[in-house]
Length: 366
Ligand SMILES: *Cc1c(COP(=O)(O)O)cnc(C)c1O
Image (cartoon, rainbow, N blue to C red; front, side, top):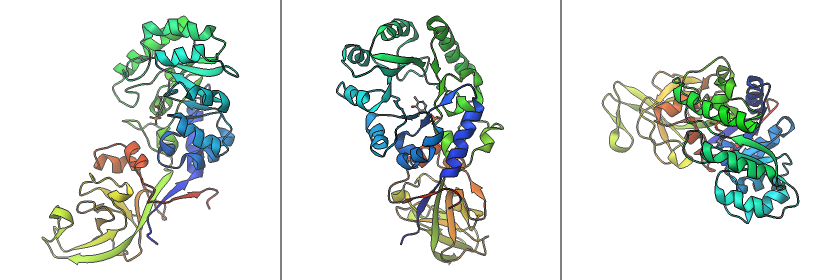
């Protein structure tokens, strides 16, 4: 069997969720499991968290239905609400909560005949300029929704553009908008994503919405004491399937991008962009071989990549290779670090791991 697997540590997932809760003891936290739990497997992650999580959040009703059909009974928030009017009936039947970000959604909600009122999060555009009502339109819509028998547990929801950044000016501008609106409407709030959960207690509301931190990625530009306690959840693991010796000056892989600067030993690893590993990885991108750091040498291929193991004498056929996550000897290679070498963010690497890399779930150190 091809040795590439994505190991998912469900104890680490629970640890990271508890960390999100400890950051914000006055808030409740929905666990964001959209995009198949950032590539970790939504149903398995939701099952692992369900006993400690009051609600889950996903992007759309298709993702919510996967959880319901898998037996998850907790409330599930649709972060972008419904995408067509007919979806409201499913929201009603399946106990989903919904964001409302557009006038047509308001109209559908106000005129529907429902079995029972739906918990609604009214989305305000406080500066992200993507989804939501402008603050000056939001108050009138809030009052309409509040007066409707179809709506319950109304919350004000907004999303931050820069909560991860060291420069806090824009964050404070968004926060200022929200605070004055919340005062005017006396609205309970749902504002904080992972970086705001970790770094901005002023943004902690009745509900927070941590996502990527649950999977052990640190979203902050500058780590803090809490974010340093996050544990990696996914370990993308493979093995060496071939080894070769190169003379100084010999190239490796497509276009010969990497050339041996000395006599070198090159390991071929079963993992490539056909598995979701980023082809933008440059020479020097770290990997762990037998728990020891070494670097990618040559362009990533579809099914394989090549690593300079000249300084890893223990490297042999079948040696463990960790692309990110935790090696058997305990060494950790953060996905955030790999992302920097690929000119991307952890979110794209994690959500990009393809089904070709089977997920293996572990908990209770099993
Ligand atoms: C994805 C998402 C989140 C979670 O964001 P992270 O940066 O992963 O914590 C929170 N809120 C909304 C509206 C989202 O779409």
